Amino acid sequence: EVQLVESGGGLIQPGGSLRLSCAASGFTVGNNYMNWVRQAPGKGLEWVSLIYSGGATKYADSVKGRFTISRDSSKNMLYLQMNSLRVEDTAVYYCGGTSSLDYWGQGTLVTVSS
Amino acid sequence: EIVLTQSPDFQSVTPGEKVSITCRASQSIGNNLHWYQQKADQSPKLLIKYASQSFSGVPSRFTGSGSGTDFTLTINSLEAEDAATYYCRQSISAPETFGQGTKVEIK
Image 1 (cartoon, rainbow over the protein chains, first blue to last red):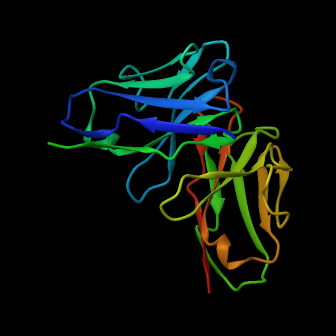
Image 2 (spheres, each protein chain N blue to C red; image 1 turned 90 degrees about the vertical axis):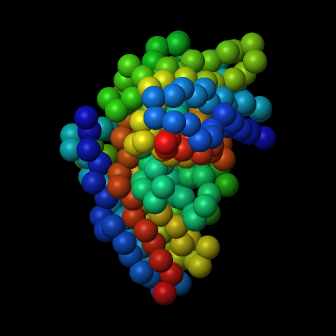
């Protein structure tokens, strides 16, 4: 059974940094296309970033230059380093696996507020 | 950026009825269109991948069709457990994008 479990969310002040983690089981992060997707309170889904199996990365314009997606194949983990956080980054962040997002984690809440 | 526009935004439906949700892309995306269901306070779940392929374990009443710019998710004989918000998403090019969502309410 595939499981993706996010962690690392919390309350952070504007301008601060957080690193989100996504632990995978039953699924190999390094061999797959992995995404981060977020959902602001009461809003729809917003794509944030992806990393291809080959290692290339892409970002939404809203986070480009502030967020960095990475993975550790030895630990079967996906990460999202978030710097210069803004109030509008407040959301539940989901990691997802495969190009069609077959698998989703339960999400981790990031709240950016002073 | 490819914009996905879903219609309708909201639908109130009686159990047993058929539901159709459309997703229109601002440019051709081939079959790189996927459908998700999100129930209240839950993570999204994949229903249909690549426009028409049913995902494992998804009830057969959920079907997808279309290609290019126009796509449809159909729920045949709606059940009470299908109350949710449904999203389409394109994966042909980054930035990947989602539709705005269609909320389905059970009458």
